[in-house]
Amino acid sequence: MENVRLGIIGIGNIGTAHSLHIHADHKVQGMVLSAICDISEERRAWAKEHLPGVAVFEQAADMYRSGLIDAVLIAVPHYDHPALAALAFANGLHVLVEKPAGVYTKQVLEMNAAAEQSGKVFGIMYNQRTNPVYQKVRELMQSGELGALKRVVWIITNWYRPQAYHDSGSWRSTWKGEGGGTLINQNPHNLDLLQWMLGMPSRIRSFCSFGKYYDIEVEDDVTAYLEYPNGASGVYITSTGEAPGTNRLEISGDMGRIVVENNRISFDRNRISEREHNRINTEAFKAPESWHVDIPVATDSGEQHIGILKNFANAILHGDKLLAPGEEGINGLLISNAIHYSTWKDDWAVLDSFDHDHFYELLQERINNSTVQKNVSQKVSDVRGSH
Image 1 (cartoon, one colour):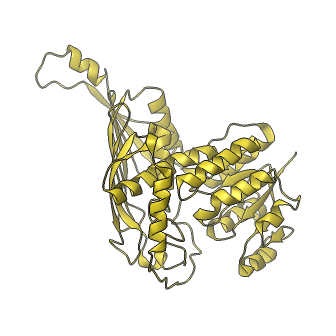
Image 2 (cartoon, rainbow, N blue to C red):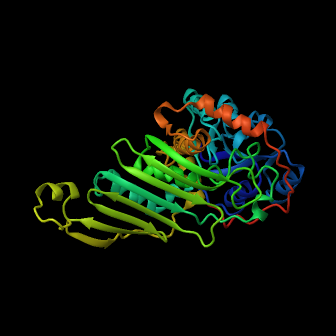
Image 3 (cartoon, rainbow, N blue to C red):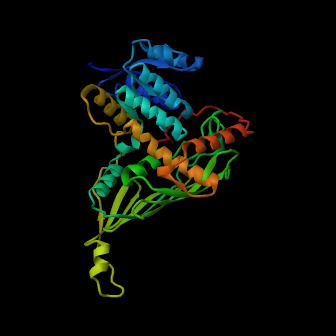
């Protein structure tokens, strides 16, 4: 195989961007766009005009069986990701799914099982993993440079979205259409990065506000307390209702403290471990000697979506290791579901014994009891404010 023949399902905002990167701008070596699929007649007409030579389908099953594609990129609303992925695997296709992996863990577990059984390449569009800053933080943690984790605090409130955004689609910011608010829409990247860099927490106690700032039924303000297996603690704060917002990640360990802000890393590094200092020190107020270091790292944010597409193509063509394996999509989603679950139950959510079925039941209650009536405004066409 010289090139991966890709099909894209969903030519909305992000699907359109992917199609142009591949077909018009030729930014993904080893990949060609062979087909697109969308249930909207308007979007199919757009594709016929702007994507010459690309086959156009209305139904995913027809595209899957066409013989025109080797792999599919799924860029449709969240609930449909797992079912479309499972059908693609059943048709012998490689799969790249947009974030999040799904809305609830129960369906993503089924998708992961289908992926494993297929033996096909399975990736997820966690493009923030291409950012050199987050790659460096992960390296510092995994190498032991920061020592054992003590505390993490991530304030990520620069996801501002006005009411006009929430009104821009009938599916947006609803339990039925999207399955949540800022946790399932804006924050999947951050929740993935959190576990990718630090590992999974063991339990979560959270406090979500629903429609606090906007006329929506889902969460727009979240504060979550996390506990890790080694006893470390964390606080995760996010909102779409603050302007200007903050994006500050602070990680404390035995060897000091890392701060990530404005896509830069500073490291206040202890000369010896705080635990070792505590063991040998005899002075009442003496802290470990610490040096302030600005970590040298590229601040260009990496190749983002194009980097994931290139990596996906090379995994199929040359067996390269995936930067964002699709099976890992469940990790960030489990944190997201646990934050919802803790708030709904007003109790701790324990991750290694998470009740996937009960979460699904509680989500269905919110869908069935919804009274929201969307007044849809003009569609969002500029996605530069997204990630």
